Image (cartoon, rainbow, N blue to C red; front, side, top):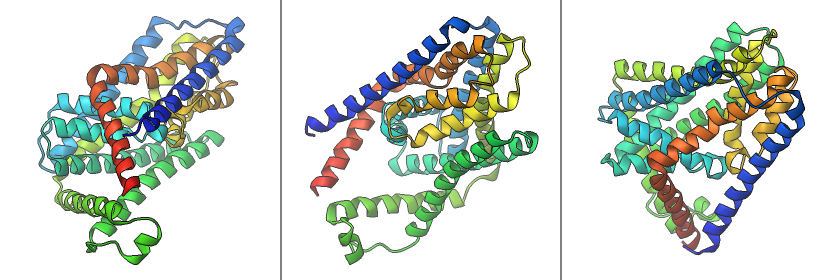
Length: 340
């Protein structure tokens, strides 16, 4: 791999994180004279509990997704897989390193590559379906939420629709016979022999994954879906857990619960690693008039910690080396395809 590519990658990552910290510091300084950066112990306890439940639920979802397609996946491997994905996604544009990191953890744990793809394929489908269910429930419960509800449905609906659309396209393509040599239309768009070989191999794995998912164990799939719903629901709870014990004023819970979910899934499409400050700017624009001034800076700082920084730290501790290897391997494969 040429030295220019990793240098550009880490330069972009460094600049993006510098932007995140810079925007955060600017906002905290702007609100500094109106409050403090501390929150009650109860706020931290509730937020930490939500994070713990979210990680456990997400890991059980992965294990039970594997069981639903008759693959054995220990919970400890699921935990490493989930946190490696968090770390890999945080340091790459548009979270592009998340799935390679998760895939590599599974493979290095002894899961066959095809089975690893099956597990991740099933898990992503459950993620999209559970997101759709959670958004439907909150649309009914918070039907008078107004603009925030429309924004959440738009952002999360696009995310879920994209995942389900890619799954449907993969299923459709996997059912077709793929020629050994690239067809004329593929060559016209740059899919020559090397790239076409990768696509053929990938579609063969997708075909195996689709066949496995079609023969799913309904009981384990249902358990995995419930765990997925819990994992998504916990992301609704972090900001209310931080803010409500810290204020004596009446604060509407709808924006506290709904806006952050849109921020988290909306950040997945931001090209800059970590969001490049976009999440912080969106947080201020949406919630600056909702959270009381004396608690705003602390709420932003600690919400970002419990939904982003803590996952980077845990991912780096549990599976940081594997995630970095996955990012490097992805870059090497991209470079090989370019040369091909």
